[in-house]
Length: 307
Image (cartoon, rainbow, N blue to C red; front, side, top):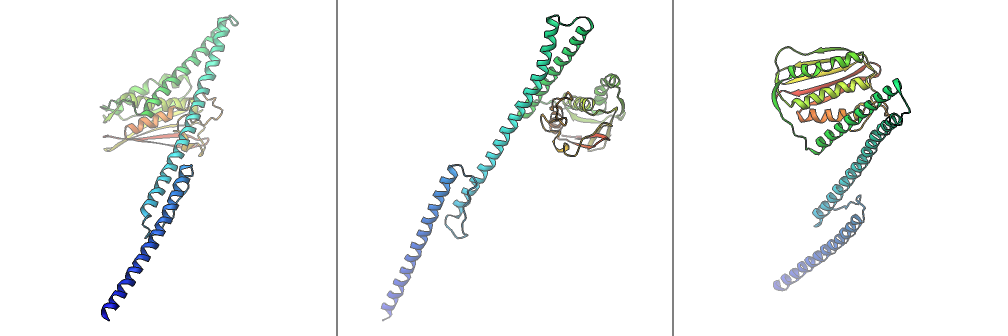
């Protein structure tokens, strides 16, 4: 009697176990079917497809993995589209910045070559053609430098130099330029020595681009340059009393080819400040901007004393 009862219980347990396995296999089969359908959907381009799963599902990790793949693919696709759009905008802007002054340059030179102008008017045409040629030269130089920075091919030569002496040597070349442009200036550079690791050419480009930016775009009459130093870092500020910028422009001014003057008639090429940001970053520093419409703009650089 006990043996028969034991066999009955064992049979029931075996039957229940078989039913459990069958149920489990049917669920797994259904999940695999859903996974197959989801994979086909993702393969066809629907990267928004997600798979729902329960905590105890055997295919839970597979479903999570597929969801991660779909999300990562969607993120990469978005970045690729953004990059393509940025590239198209860059090519459009470059075409504009080259084509317009080049066509103007050809027009002035053609007038001179065909002897349409003479005397003082001819001299004026030669001067304008020279300015157009210089603009194209500077644009190509900026573009070439930006491409090297963007691709990581720029080679830096860091040396221990006196920041204050280096700054004075750069600034002194701008005094006559500022005076000829009717700009007042204040240069506050400490007389004491301040040694730090710096790339002289890169630092020179940073200051030159900031001064050029103020000269061309600020529409002001005064530039102030100050250096403040402590044991950890140097703080450099450059301020103008010009027209300033609206808050809408501030987050974008360090972007490549961005110009606050949407008419693109101010003479810049939208690369100068993006180059400055990359060069400052190469020194492990930061650059920020503060501007108020009608009151001017201040650029602030923070450069660590040791890289």
